Length: 254
Image (tube, rainbow, N blue to C red):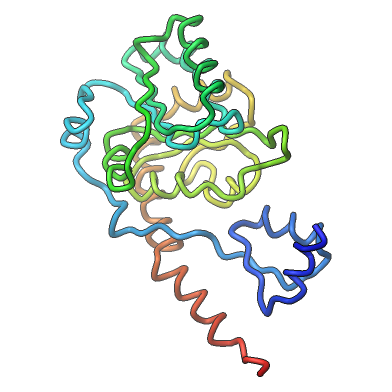
Protein backbone atom coordinates (compact mmCIF):
# COMPACT_ATOMS: atom_id res chain seq x y z
CA UNK A 1 0.00 0.00 0.00
CA UNK A 2 2.77 2.55 0.75
CA UNK A 3 4.25 1.94 -2.72
CA UNK A 4 0.80 2.24 -4.29
CA UNK A 5 0.23 5.59 -2.55
CA UNK A 6 3.71 6.79 -3.58
CA UNK A 7 3.02 5.87 -7.21
CA UNK A 8 -0.28 7.75 -7.18
CA UNK A 9 1.33 10.80 -5.55
CA UNK A 10 4.06 10.94 -8.20
CA UNK A 11 1.66 10.61 -11.14
CA UNK A 12 0.43 13.58 -13.18
CA UNK A 13 -2.91 11.90 -13.84
CA UNK A 14 -4.48 8.70 -12.52
CA UNK A 15 -7.12 6.82 -14.50
CA UNK A 16 -9.34 4.01 -13.19
CA UNK A 17 -11.31 1.64 -15.43
CA UNK A 18 -14.48 1.88 -13.33
CA UNK A 19 -16.04 4.05 -10.64
CA UNK A 20 -15.69 1.13 -8.26
CA UNK A 21 -11.93 0.98 -8.85
CA UNK A 22 -11.70 4.75 -8.58
CA UNK A 23 -13.49 4.83 -5.22
CA UNK A 24 -11.37 1.97 -3.88
CA UNK A 25 -8.19 3.83 -4.86
CA UNK A 26 -9.45 7.07 -3.31
CA UNK A 27 -10.24 5.26 -0.05
CA UNK A 28 -6.64 3.99 0.07
CA UNK A 29 -4.78 7.11 -1.06
CA UNK A 30 -7.06 10.00 -0.13
CA UNK A 31 -6.24 11.71 -3.43
CA UNK A 32 -8.95 13.23 -5.60
CA UNK A 33 -6.97 13.34 -8.87
CA UNK A 34 -8.35 9.99 -10.08
CA UNK A 35 -10.81 9.95 -12.97
CA UNK A 36 -12.67 7.09 -14.64
CA UNK A 37 -12.17 6.03 -18.24
CA UNK A 38 -13.48 2.53 -18.98
CA UNK A 39 -11.77 -0.14 -21.06
CA UNK A 40 -12.56 -0.14 -24.77
CA UNK A 41 -13.76 -2.77 -27.22
CA UNK A 42 -12.16 -3.10 -30.63
CA UNK A 43 -15.34 -3.11 -32.69
CA UNK A 44 -13.43 -4.10 -35.82
CA UNK A 45 -12.89 -7.49 -34.15
CA UNK A 46 -16.06 -7.81 -32.05
CA UNK A 47 -19.20 -7.30 -34.13
CA UNK A 48 -22.36 -9.27 -35.01
CA UNK A 49 -21.85 -12.27 -37.29
CA UNK A 50 -24.08 -15.13 -38.43
CA UNK A 51 -25.02 -17.22 -35.40
CA UNK A 52 -25.69 -20.25 -37.59
CA UNK A 53 -22.30 -20.08 -39.32
CA UNK A 54 -20.43 -19.51 -36.05
CA UNK A 55 -22.16 -22.51 -34.48
CA UNK A 56 -20.92 -24.70 -37.31
CA UNK A 57 -17.34 -23.81 -36.36
CA UNK A 58 -17.88 -25.07 -32.80
CA UNK A 59 -20.15 -27.96 -33.85
CA UNK A 60 -23.14 -26.54 -32.00
CA UNK A 61 -26.76 -27.22 -32.95
CA UNK A 62 -28.80 -24.36 -34.36
CA UNK A 63 -31.78 -25.26 -32.14
CA UNK A 64 -29.78 -25.05 -28.89
CA UNK A 65 -30.31 -22.17 -26.48
CA UNK A 66 -26.71 -21.31 -25.69
CA UNK A 67 -25.53 -19.56 -22.54
CA UNK A 68 -21.81 -18.70 -22.47
CA UNK A 69 -19.21 -17.87 -19.83
CA UNK A 70 -15.75 -16.88 -21.07
CA UNK A 71 -13.26 -16.21 -18.29
CA UNK A 72 -10.54 -17.67 -16.13
CA UNK A 73 -11.72 -20.70 -14.21
CA UNK A 74 -11.52 -19.34 -10.69
CA UNK A 75 -14.14 -19.49 -7.93
CA UNK A 76 -14.64 -15.71 -7.91
CA UNK A 77 -16.23 -15.94 -11.39
CA UNK A 78 -19.19 -17.93 -9.98
CA UNK A 79 -19.55 -20.69 -12.57
CA UNK A 80 -20.95 -22.97 -9.89
CA UNK A 81 -23.85 -20.58 -9.28
CA UNK A 82 -24.76 -20.69 -12.97
CA UNK A 83 -24.57 -24.49 -12.98
CA UNK A 84 -27.04 -24.61 -10.08
CA UNK A 85 -29.26 -22.17 -11.98
CA UNK A 86 -29.20 -24.47 -15.03
CA UNK A 87 -30.79 -27.17 -12.89
CA UNK A 88 -33.79 -24.83 -12.58
CA UNK A 89 -33.71 -23.43 -16.11
CA UNK A 90 -33.75 -26.81 -17.88
CA UNK A 91 -37.25 -27.51 -16.59
CA UNK A 92 -38.61 -24.59 -18.62
CA UNK A 93 -35.98 -24.45 -21.37
CA UNK A 94 -34.90 -28.03 -22.11
CA UNK A 95 -32.78 -26.87 -25.08
CA UNK A 96 -30.47 -24.89 -22.78
CA UNK A 97 -26.73 -25.47 -23.17
CA UNK A 98 -24.23 -23.79 -20.85
CA UNK A 99 -20.75 -23.42 -22.36
CA UNK A 100 -17.87 -22.77 -19.96
CA UNK A 101 -14.85 -21.45 -21.87
CA UNK A 102 -11.46 -20.79 -20.33
CA UNK A 103 -8.77 -22.38 -18.19
CA UNK A 104 -7.37 -21.70 -14.75
CA UNK A 105 -7.65 -23.33 -11.35
CA UNK A 106 -7.65 -27.12 -11.91
CA UNK A 107 -9.10 -28.00 -8.46
CA UNK A 108 -11.96 -25.56 -9.13
CA UNK A 109 -12.54 -27.10 -12.57
CA UNK A 110 -12.61 -30.54 -10.97
CA UNK A 111 -15.17 -29.28 -8.43
CA UNK A 112 -17.34 -27.85 -11.22
CA UNK A 113 -17.29 -31.12 -13.15
CA UNK A 114 -18.22 -33.00 -9.99
CA UNK A 115 -21.12 -30.60 -9.43
CA UNK A 116 -22.31 -31.21 -13.00
CA UNK A 117 -22.20 -34.96 -12.37
CA UNK A 118 -23.94 -34.69 -9.00
CA UNK A 119 -26.78 -32.67 -10.54
CA UNK A 120 -26.88 -34.93 -13.62
CA UNK A 121 -26.38 -32.00 -15.97
CA UNK A 122 -23.84 -33.64 -18.29
CA UNK A 123 -25.99 -32.98 -21.37
CA UNK A 124 -26.56 -29.33 -20.41
CA UNK A 125 -23.12 -28.10 -19.27
CA UNK A 126 -20.05 -28.32 -21.51
CA UNK A 127 -16.43 -27.34 -20.83
CA UNK A 128 -14.84 -26.06 -24.03
CA UNK A 129 -11.42 -25.17 -22.62
CA UNK A 130 -9.03 -22.51 -23.87
CA UNK A 131 -10.28 -20.24 -26.65
CA UNK A 132 -7.74 -18.48 -28.88
CA UNK A 133 -8.09 -14.71 -29.11
CA UNK A 134 -9.13 -14.74 -32.77
CA UNK A 135 -11.92 -17.22 -32.02
CA UNK A 136 -13.47 -15.31 -29.12
CA UNK A 137 -15.70 -13.13 -31.37
CA UNK A 138 -16.89 -16.29 -33.13
CA UNK A 139 -17.80 -17.94 -29.81
CA UNK A 140 -19.71 -14.87 -28.62
CA UNK A 141 -21.62 -14.88 -31.91
CA UNK A 142 -22.33 -18.61 -31.59
CA UNK A 143 -24.06 -18.01 -28.25
CA UNK A 144 -27.40 -16.43 -27.37
CA UNK A 145 -26.65 -14.90 -23.97
CA UNK A 146 -23.41 -14.16 -22.12
CA UNK A 147 -23.19 -14.60 -18.35
CA UNK A 148 -20.58 -14.05 -15.65
CA UNK A 149 -21.92 -14.55 -12.13
CA UNK A 150 -19.02 -13.02 -10.20
CA UNK A 151 -18.84 -13.01 -6.42
CA UNK A 152 -18.12 -9.84 -4.46
CA UNK A 153 -14.57 -10.80 -3.40
CA UNK A 154 -12.53 -13.96 -3.05
CA UNK A 155 -10.35 -15.19 -0.16
CA UNK A 156 -7.56 -12.80 -1.20
CA UNK A 157 -9.89 -9.82 -1.42
CA UNK A 158 -9.79 -9.71 -5.23
CA UNK A 159 -12.88 -8.34 -6.92
CA UNK A 160 -14.16 -7.59 -10.41
CA UNK A 161 -12.61 -4.30 -11.49
CA UNK A 162 -14.69 -3.87 -14.64
CA UNK A 163 -15.88 -6.73 -16.85
CA UNK A 164 -14.72 -6.25 -20.45
CA UNK A 165 -16.31 -9.54 -21.57
CA UNK A 166 -19.78 -8.05 -21.07
CA UNK A 167 -18.96 -5.33 -23.58
CA UNK A 168 -17.36 -7.77 -26.01
CA UNK A 169 -20.56 -9.84 -25.95
CA UNK A 170 -22.70 -6.71 -26.38
CA UNK A 171 -20.53 -5.70 -29.34
CA UNK A 172 -21.52 -9.02 -30.93
CA UNK A 173 -25.19 -8.24 -30.33
CA UNK A 174 -25.66 -10.53 -27.32
CA UNK A 175 -27.52 -9.54 -24.13
CA UNK A 176 -25.60 -10.22 -20.93
CA UNK A 177 -26.22 -11.26 -17.33
CA UNK A 178 -23.89 -10.16 -14.54
CA UNK A 179 -23.81 -9.56 -10.83
CA UNK A 180 -24.14 -6.27 -8.98
CA UNK A 181 -20.57 -6.31 -7.65
CA UNK A 182 -17.32 -4.43 -8.22
CA UNK A 183 -17.07 -2.58 -11.51
CA UNK A 184 -19.60 -4.73 -13.35
CA UNK A 185 -22.41 -2.11 -13.09
CA UNK A 186 -20.12 0.23 -15.07
CA UNK A 187 -19.90 -2.34 -17.87
CA UNK A 188 -23.50 -3.59 -17.71
CA UNK A 189 -26.41 -1.15 -17.82
CA UNK A 190 -29.26 -2.97 -16.06
CA UNK A 191 -32.31 -3.61 -18.27
CA UNK A 192 -30.58 -1.70 -21.08
CA UNK A 193 -27.70 -3.91 -22.22
CA UNK A 194 -28.33 -6.82 -19.88
CA UNK A 195 -29.60 -7.90 -16.47
CA UNK A 196 -27.90 -7.40 -13.12
CA UNK A 197 -28.59 -9.96 -10.38
CA UNK A 198 -27.31 -10.28 -6.86
CA UNK A 199 -24.29 -12.58 -6.43
CA UNK A 200 -24.47 -16.14 -5.11
CA UNK A 201 -28.17 -16.49 -5.95
CA UNK A 202 -28.99 -19.41 -8.32
CA UNK A 203 -32.72 -18.63 -8.23
CA UNK A 204 -32.33 -15.00 -9.31
CA UNK A 205 -29.82 -16.10 -11.94
CA UNK A 206 -32.26 -18.70 -13.28
CA UNK A 207 -35.03 -16.09 -13.47
CA UNK A 208 -32.81 -13.77 -15.52
CA UNK A 209 -31.84 -16.58 -17.91
CA UNK A 210 -35.47 -17.65 -18.37
CA UNK A 211 -36.57 -14.06 -18.93
CA UNK A 212 -34.09 -13.51 -21.75
CA UNK A 213 -34.82 -16.81 -23.48
CA UNK A 214 -38.59 -16.51 -23.07
CA UNK A 215 -39.20 -12.86 -23.96
CA UNK A 216 -38.07 -12.21 -27.54
CA UNK A 217 -39.06 -8.54 -27.47
CA UNK A 218 -37.02 -7.91 -24.32
CA UNK A 219 -34.12 -9.96 -25.73
CA UNK A 220 -34.07 -7.94 -28.96
CA UNK A 221 -34.30 -4.67 -27.04
CA UNK A 222 -31.22 -5.52 -24.95
CA UNK A 223 -29.40 -6.81 -28.03
CA UNK A 224 -29.92 -3.57 -29.97
CA UNK A 225 -29.24 -1.34 -26.94
CA UNK A 226 -26.08 -3.20 -25.97
CA UNK A 227 -24.62 -2.99 -29.46
CA UNK A 228 -25.45 0.71 -29.76
CA UNK A 229 -24.03 1.44 -26.29
CA UNK A 230 -20.69 -0.21 -27.08
CA UNK A 231 -20.35 1.57 -30.43
CA UNK A 232 -21.25 4.95 -28.93
CA UNK A 233 -19.46 4.80 -25.58
CA UNK A 234 -16.82 2.08 -25.53
CA UNK A 235 -15.27 2.03 -29.00
CA UNK A 236 -11.52 2.42 -29.47
CA UNK A 237 -11.96 5.84 -31.10
CA UNK A 238 -14.15 7.11 -28.25
CA UNK A 239 -11.96 5.88 -25.38
CA UNK A 240 -8.72 6.60 -27.24
CA UNK A 241 -9.86 10.18 -27.77
CA UNK A 242 -10.30 10.64 -24.02
CA UNK A 243 -6.74 9.45 -23.37
CA UNK A 244 -5.42 11.63 -26.17
CA UNK A 245 -7.02 14.74 -24.68
CA UNK A 246 -5.59 14.00 -21.23
CA UNK A 247 -2.08 13.33 -22.54
CA UNK A 248 -2.19 16.50 -24.63
CA UNK A 249 -3.26 18.56 -21.61
CA UNK A 250 -0.35 17.44 -19.43
CA UNK A 251 2.57 19.87 -19.57
CA UNK A 252 6.01 18.34 -18.98
CA UNK A 253 7.69 19.62 -15.83
CA UNK A 254 11.20 19.54 -17.30
